Image (cartoon, rainbow, N blue to C red):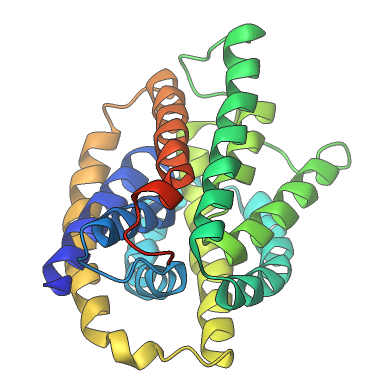
Length: 267
């Protein structure tokens, strides 16, 4: 029963990621969490993390190759090195404290990010861009915010398997274009964050080989989602992209915060 479930959740996760750049790990963990409410899987973050990390790695490689013309190399390398180093302690905390409290903390993080984004986008009424802005440049003035984003992204990647909140704040602060962001983020995930995360999980004793069929199911489901998402992404404007990211943060944040009230057991 779990294999079709993994394929279905992976399909949805890669579909959303390909269309918007929103973290496939968040979508997959949410699907794994919802399935656990109905007793279809364990619901453990670490288990979901290992599945989506391994099955999505070749898919992310395909995505990175497809979007390579939009890659911001200097931004990607700076983010990647900083985030990879910061992700190791996060993975260690995840493995040692994988329970309902971690889900609630994750939900609170997403809601805080949504509130911060709402303040900037709505209350302050920052102009919305209908066209992609010029390519972001890493220089002396922008390096501090780039390094800060990479550090926070790496910590969140290790702890919750998602650097997206940090990257989303960067989006709002810089007005980076949709395609440039999607390409650079998937580059960072593929080359730096996911390989480091897999190595740390294996080093901490997680039996990665026990889920080998889950990886295959997730891969095939993800291929379909990635193909469809890349096709549909051409119809998503920069304005629609920002609205979609905000909606996902609110929806998933509320869902995870409600974990103590809906889970059959304290996972």
